[in-house]
Image (cartoon, rainbow, N blue to C red; front, side):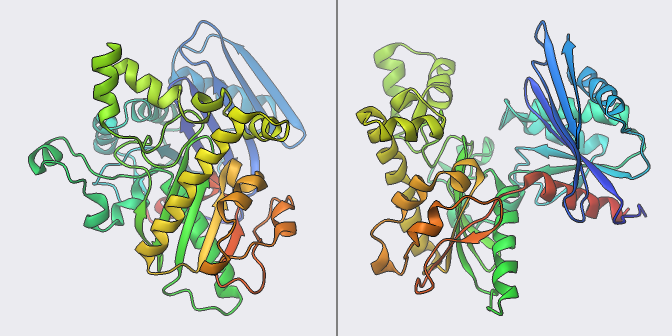
Length: 406
């Protein structure tokens, strides 16, 4: 059995198609020893940086693949006085977007699991193939440490069939594994559990707690969770479905694909690029950063105003529908970059809902904090919270649990 102590550390790796983010932290209390990123992998000139307390270091040079990226990570660790061969590192946790229907929890990486993750790349080609490259690089560098994959989709494998099933011809759906997989599951699980723990500490019964969690970042998703079990989520087969996002459309009539192909002569790849990378807030107003968008709204920019209205309208639709899915709602929680920091979105999303038991404290809503905080009034029947998400900590915890069981 791998020992896990207060001094144990987990190396968390998040591999993208051209980047590799990493963090070394405690799975016990979330203490971060080092964090950094390797960027522009596979391009002519790459870059990397690391921060470890007061120590920082950078790298510039070719990074042909993720194996070399991990070697550079090892080099950077040494430059800030750390070592990847430190005996305290008891596990490596890998974030993987798509686990399909087969992975409902964190899983020890074996050759077979590695192949499964690769095979699931057909459902998430932009994410899983890169994750496999990161796994290969890390396993080569740290062959004697347990490697654990933690899937964004895992939490939502527990969705009811009625929520996970599309009304698509059954034979096609089965043959091509078309269903609602969701995404951001690690965040939704972490935030919902944090809320339940917070309320339980106040003496409240959380056994049947009805929660709506709104993960609002450049990618955005909503979930309906009752008694710790997800009942619905906004993302679907891919992360395109659901809320309006930084560059993604969110919900859209599927026939738009056909319309753009027939009328504009666009290929499937071109349409995919438009819907995923040139739409959302970027497509609506030319900006995807909400700091720029809110500044433009304050300056009277009508295009930005409409974009924000579209964003909030979609958000309110999901809050309303999930309230019915849950049979009522006890908590609404905002998290991720926009959810945690943009008070205008929170205020507008919940404006005028006092008749539904949702009463926001406008002053508390405008306060900034990195801590969990309640922003509803004491009289509000629905508790509204802001909870900073910490996916790296959640991945570290799950990876440590798997490693400790060996």
